[in-house]
Image (tube, rainbow, N blue to C red; front, side, top):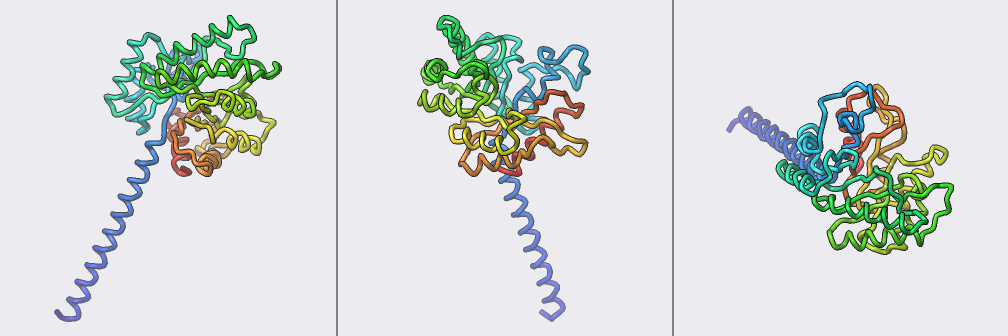
Length: 312
């Protein structure tokens, strides 16, 4: 082999090695993203304007109407998300038969229902009247049964109570203790989110978790549910208190500008707090703000997902 041929063959070998290295890096990046996407979920709250039950009157449509039967396929096709979180206000049928159908639809596209966010109708697990509180506990148990039928491993139930009302950990704790005991029987954890009422104070949530003392009573930290007067330091303090007990996280986004920058707070910083505290669970994308935005909800949700994936 002469010098010219040697250089030519050597150049081809180097080029081949470089292409192989690039290919391996691309495959590694693809595998890494796929692994991270397994830790991404999404709630139907993001698409509340496409559900007749939660779209305000006279609000313009932002796409075809959705039902819960549509959601698993919609999330898989549009978002590449297979962990599905449902909002109680989106159930057009609350029968166990319907819930089992939702589970089957999710399984048919390689997805699973991970949680139900329970809001209306009103209930109060901190009610000082024992009869009224018992009624609320039974109401939540019914929804835990629906969560189990859907295939979900958890249900978020609000504490109730008022910030002006003195928090009594014995009363509220008894409610969650009963729910955790029931949840252990059916395989559904009861989750406490920083979501108003007595749960507006993270200290109350931690006190409840310790009082109940069950692996079936965990937290659901929400990035956005923080009093304005608290500022960013309070947001981070709140998350640091709740993450150690977290089963699921609400990776909430609020307002985005025209360049799709999230301007309300640093979502990435919130995710990094979870990472630093060893959280290995699912981040469920959610968008909620007092004033609706005109941006396509699919585009907003994808941006939230990207901000989480970049920081896991």
